[in-house]
Length: 359
Image (tube, rainbow, N blue to C red; front, side, top):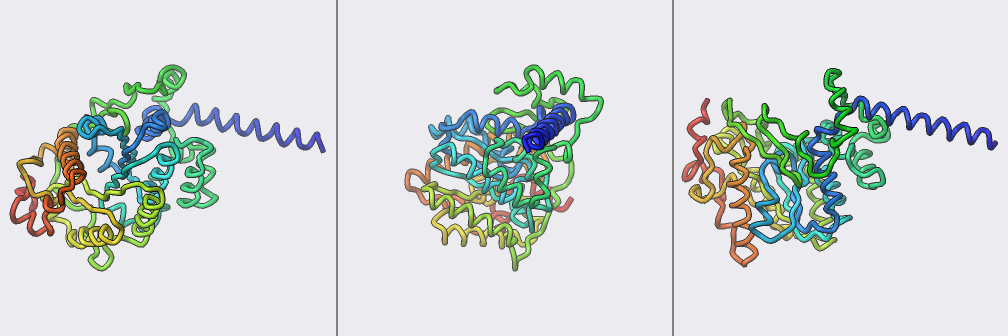
C-alpha cells in the first residue's frame, strides 16, 4: 500500500514538474498587462479603497495616478481586455477579499453586457485566472463558471491557450530568469511601435488616432438592451456591494458622437441602466452624453479607434470623471451634467467626430 502511494505521489510530482517546465518554456506572461495588473493588485493589498472594473474601455480610460491626485484616494484599475460581467464580479470579490473598498466604479461598455455566456469569450477568463493566486477561491469559481470542469486543464497548462512564437522564446526565457517579473518594471510592457505602454496600477496609455470610420460593433436590441447573462452579473455585483457596504457607481467612458450616431437603439441601453440604478440605490453616468464640450473637449485625435480613448483622451476624461465624483460627494445633483437622450447630445453638443458619422 505504501509503495502504491509513493508511486502515485512520484507520478504527481513528475507531472507537475513537466507542466511547470512547459509553462516556463512556452508561455509568455512576461508581456501580459493582466499579469502585471494582478501582481500589483496583490502587492497593494490593504491599500486600495477605490476600484475601477471593466474591459479595455476601463483600463485605457482611467488613470489611477490622476484620480488619486484629484481625490486623495488610493485607486486601482482592475480592468482587463474583453472583461465580461462575470470577470468584473470575480475581480471585485478578489480585490474586496484583501482591501476595505469604499467605492467601485464599474465601466459599462455595452457589448460585454450583451454577451450570452462567458464561454463564448474564454480568453477574457484566462487573462485573469492565469494570473490569480493559486489559492484564490475566485479563480476556481470563475474558471468553473466559464468552462466547467474541462476548463481546469487550462489552469495546469496555460500553453493550451497561448504559446509564444519560437523566435521569441530565447529572449522570453532570459526575461523570466532575470527581471521579467520584477514589480514596477514596465520595460516588457512598453510597445513603442504599437504606441502603447503600461503605466502602473492597471492603466495602459495608448497613442494614435482612428484610421477608419466610426462604425458600430453592435446595435442594441430595444427589447433586450442587456442579455440575461449581463443582467445576472450586474445584479450579483450590485448585491455584493450592498452586502459589503461598498458604494457602486456605474459609468460608461465617452464614446465618439459618430459612434453613437451609428449605433441603433443605444438609448434603450442608457434607459435600462438608469432604471437599474434607480432601483438599486446607485447611479449611472454615461459620459458619451456629457453636456459641456468645453469641459470634456474630446477631439477625433483623443480616440485611438472607433470607440477607445487614447492616452491623451484618457487624461482629459479622468479629469472630468474626478470632477463629477467630487461634485457628487459635495452633494450636487450631477445628473444635470448629462443629457437625458442620445438625440439631444447629437443635436446640441456632439463632439468633432460627428462630421465623420457617414463615412
